[in-house]
Length: 520
Image (cartoon, rainbow, N blue to C red):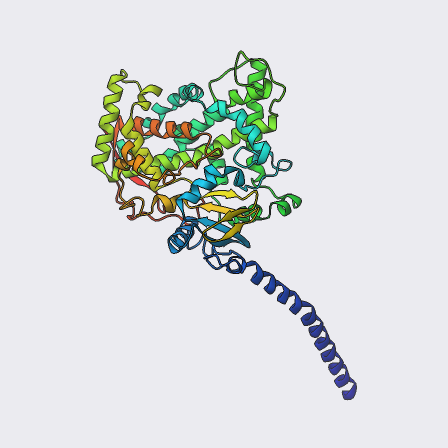
């Protein structure tokens, strides 16, 4: 019996060793192949003798993004490390070799001169599963050109002035939202109030919604904004993954937006369109213009109908883009501008004096024409956008091979290219004392003295931000409304120097932008 037991034990040991050997024979080659695959991927720039930041799996050169660092911290470090060694540096986004532009002339070539080689943004969209993702910001090639031509007339000065009427209705509510803080001598979270204001403006102009975010200190649309913009580390990594592997992501049916976000916006837009068409309701907003493109193919009231009309899904996607592109970016720009005015009381007073002087000329009314006359206010907004660009990196994709001379390398078709707007706009060689808030950097003479591509808050070239003028008007209107009736100082809760929230995909400050406010 003992002999039989020993034989059984020995047989089991041999079976276990055989199984282990089989596993090792199968697994080790897989690991070896994976290792060689990664080594090949992360030697892309070295093989081409391009100055570069090393990468390692799974984040590439973005190790620590979303936990220890914000994305602009990483790209800023790479920019300053390699600036002057050539027109670009290489780095890795997950597994993908990526170009970081470090030379202003190359910025100009990519965005303007050689636009046709870098026409697309490389954004992932899935028209079938996720129709809202197929908006102007994402779509490519002829689809983009067609939609840009359709939408451009909706953002002329005349049409923006038309939408300004809707914006004016919310202005007084914005000022009144500060009343309870003034009366209670409590600090305000400037970013939170700016978000409510821009949410109400965009909700009204894009969807015809009375969100009442200011009145109710929140709204369903505001909550949807958080779902779209407040991404954790893995959501940011997924966003980079679907951009890097778009064909695979499409085959897998991956979505860019959560299902509940898509359902909410589709229902709101479809419901509003149905109500207006059924009851012949006409309103001065962006959705009305989209309805004209859907029903007539043109926004010209007296023009003949065109054959090429946009679909309901296309109209909904562009209305969503108005929210997506205008909500968080405008609230960021507005809150940082007010913060800097609170931090620099002499500049605040100078800006207020201009606002009051221009208002007196216009009979005390903050009209479209009055805002156009506030030239120093425009300098204040531009300086704030220089220091805190809502989008820190501009992304383009090479849609054909592109030869560089320094370094001597071909940017291959499909390669992602990043233009570090934040780094350029904070470069001390371009803007001395870049952390100092100085609106005089944007006098006509100062602008003329700089390279044309040192200020990029809205990109440049044929694919610049189509809603730039609307966004600037909204921010200037918000600041003028507040300064005409309120004064701002820093609250002790603000930690200086400001520290970016690494978990945010946008420029958000840890702890918030807390200000004390008084009536004047």
